[in-house]
Amino acid sequence: IAPEAQGKGIGGALLQALGRLVDPNRLGELFVVKDMINRFVVTVDNLPRTKLPLRTLPTLSVPGKFLVIDKGIGKAEIAPDNYRRYARYVAFFAALDSRKIAAVYFHFYPLIQQTYQDLGYKSAYFNDRLITVIDDLLAAPDVTDPVPLLQPSVLYQYADPQLEALSSGQKIMIRIGHDNAAKVKAKLRELRE
View 1 (spheres, rainbow, N blue to C red):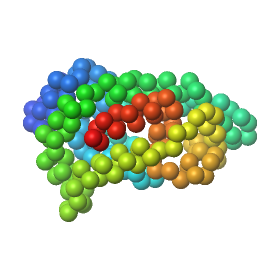
View 2 (view 1 turned 90 degrees about the horizontal axis):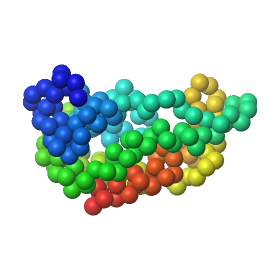
View 3 (view 1 turned 180 degrees about the vertical axis):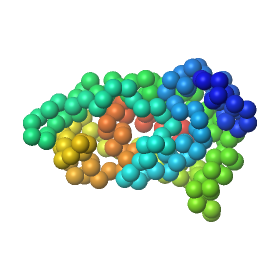
View 4 (view 1 turned 120 degrees about the vertical axis):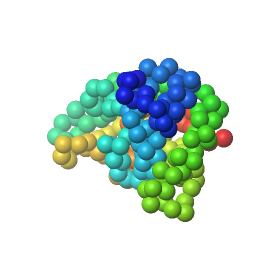
């Protein structure tokens, strides 16, 4: 983690707490450590919505470009090799000690709650929102290959209108692939408990 990201105060305390749970270098390889709590809160709040603001994601961009199998004239499928791009993130998440990460969450919850209230949710509890998001992600359909896509413009979208209408979080669960999604769901179930 870059020295400027290891500053004192809440951000530094959070990084120190997380650094006791995981290799601190891995945090800097996978996550944007600046404004981590704000990024976490904004992302969690938006996962069950149809749009996810990419500029506030707590994770660094997944390396490489989105891999597809071209089926001609604006049609494609997600390439199975695409799922490997997410393997480091999924392995990191799956390896977390659920009890220890929950302890860090509860320790920093007052700041997390304040950050949520600062977004305009004066009488709501972030933990309620987090449970809603976990439930939404767990409800993501188990989609196996092939996953047909359309490319009406620059970006791809799911060819199945029911998949395209899913929340941004559920779409991510499909984009990372069936096997990765199963690992993420297993960890989410642990964390929810």
